[in-house]
Image (cartoon, rainbow, N blue to C red; front, side, top):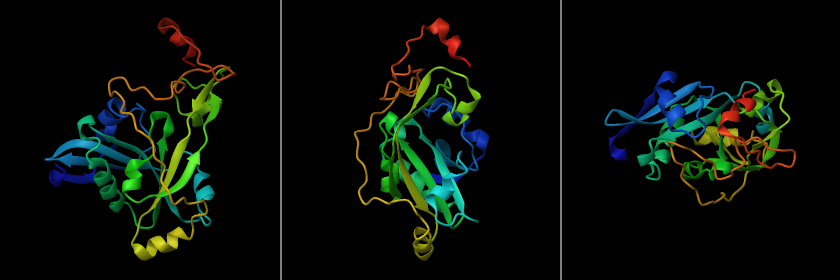
Length: 232
């Protein structure tokens, strides 16, 4: 029960089991702050924050970005049996209160996995719109920001994402911070029917994700013993 839960900061290495074996991304992000959700002192969830992969993001979001702190909530992961029971919103709410004052936080909900950000909606984040899907070099499971390192004739889908922003501070601080946000803020939250994934074999709802695509964006079927051809 949530009444038996506590949230506290944890070490990066304490997140590995959750992020490698439960979260669908199956990789470690850049972590500046990591928090654990404990029930009766047992770790049942992790939430991590780090500096965004794109240094230019803060300038695209804020009118004045000098000396401002922007973090990305880049992983939120609970044991499967705790999903859909308000543990996620409780956890995120507690984590945000443990971040430095006057911090902007951005996070994305991936439409390719049928997510639209219900946990952010429940914790009163600002919804700033949906980024359109795009295509990049196929990077064989690596993050798209590393695509310049790969020489591939194939493409991969970068799915569309819903973007949210949160401001850490008291009511007056948030009012001043809000004036500094330059992207559009929408009054209505998006809604979708979310599909839960199998922790042991996570599969996106958009079957094109994580697959090599032709120039016409069609999936290239590869036999198991030929996967090494794409290990670039």
